Amino acid sequence: MDIFKNIMVAVDFNDSIGELMTYAESLAQKYDSKIWVLHVAEPEPDFVGYEPGPQYIRDIKAEEYREEHRNLQDICKNFISGEVESEALLIQGSTVETVLEEAQKLDVDLLIVGTHKYSFLHNLLQESISMELLKKVEIPMLTIPIDD
Image 1 (cartoon, rainbow, N blue to C red):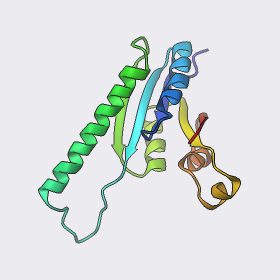
Image 2: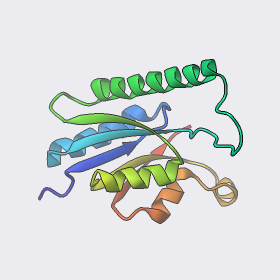
Image 3: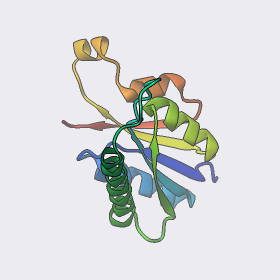
């Protein structure tokens, strides 16, 4: 039964990446799936009526994005075996909406995210990205608990 042809792993460059990739690779090997490793970068602030800023600021930001994309490519090389097809994606935007849009565009069958273990009070006062995704996602989602 080949139900997971495309698996997306949403990462945020923390220490749990190896754990998320272990789950993704295991499932990808079992179902002969492709793994999409996605990181959503902060969107540029769009202030109406303001200039985009000096060129050197834009150059610095562009270099930061290139470095983040290289890091994602390294994650694919270091944590996913060569037998599993994988691709790194760095996209700028609002995290929840961007993950959902990319999952739809890529026809993703399973979304894997890490979720932090916080107290009940903390979760009540501050909603996490993974909880927002869980409310809005229309495909299966695997959440992996992450120790802080």
